[in-house]
Image 1 (tube, chains in turn cyan, purple):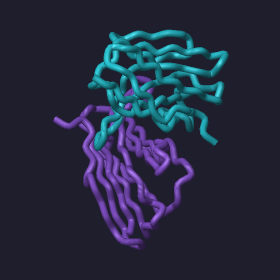
Image 2 (cartoon, chains in turn yellow, blue):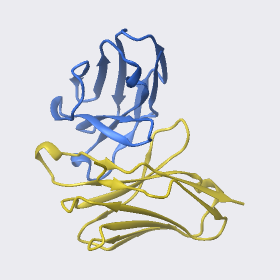
Image 3 (cartoon, chains in turn red, cyan):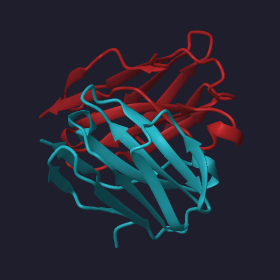
Image 4 (cartoon, chains in turn orange, red):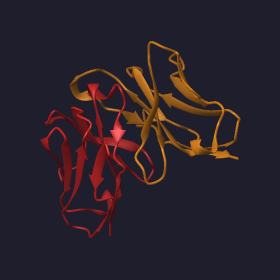
Length: 116
Length: 113
């Protein structure tokens, strides 16, 4: 039972245009969401996060939007650059203690290719 | 300086063997994790340790045993390896229970033949 899903396996975008990566979740207890970026043969690196008390968080070219009623979040990259080409993972967590402590539930990733 | 380092990077071994993967972090984080990336590319948590104490133990076969000698190290020992254990294993660490994001190692690709 996958509680975090990224339904688009891949996305291809032209340099300078906007990239929009989507993520859906089913567990209403999730209260914190993160995006990670992964290059081949490397571990995922933290990109941006958002708390469930917000609906938007921006960091430079990266903006994450959260729609709690739809249980949907998205990552916008503007403008897209060839160096952004990587696998992007959405992740979610809940609670600050107990058995959920620090646990992140990941989606399966979306491969983003930015063409020059 | 590598923040989270895991060794080896690649591991090819025969079924039935016992192997270990080591992980060390120099970030001063208090929580460490093992995640498995399966053939469908999902990253799934296996274990979590906070200050050497086991916090999370997902449904993982008993053949997998984590060991944390101190809060900077979390090793993974696997007994009687099976074909289905082939995957990429990632170690990670975090402060504040993961709310500020993990730092991942570069992964260990385990292939069981």
